[in-house]
Length: 184
Image (cartoon, rainbow, N blue to C red; front, top):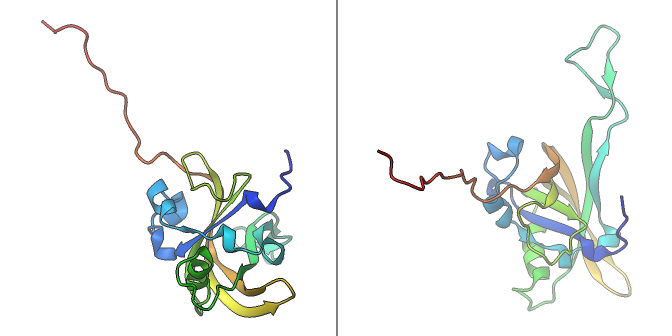
């Protein structure tokens, strides 16, 4: 697998968790649902963000548990945070203001799609491979350094993870058959 060494190839798409219908939290969002999420990638400070899928080392496996307490490996977990740039005082429309509006509230229940390897400015499209998460915002951390002011936001997984999901076509079309001659 080739490594892409640029921040411009990491996409962050956020919206309210209700943007994805309940039934699609297990099967995956439709293209229409995915397109309702806001691409806040340009507002994310990538070197301050760390939210990704990992595997748990040991997790209790109660489906096969015995008195010894069975455990399993490889259960998907996700955790971390996202850091966004603070919008200017009178800024109400830029991507920084939109990201702030989505992520600055307390205990916001959100849908998050992450996409890697595609220029972040490109909209989500059929065939894109994404990771899908249902999260709630946690603690806030305001950071200030010489170059920028940012808001760090913890993200807590809410039990729904769909890794390596391929966004399906908008409408499934069935082939049509048209006879070339009239039937007698």
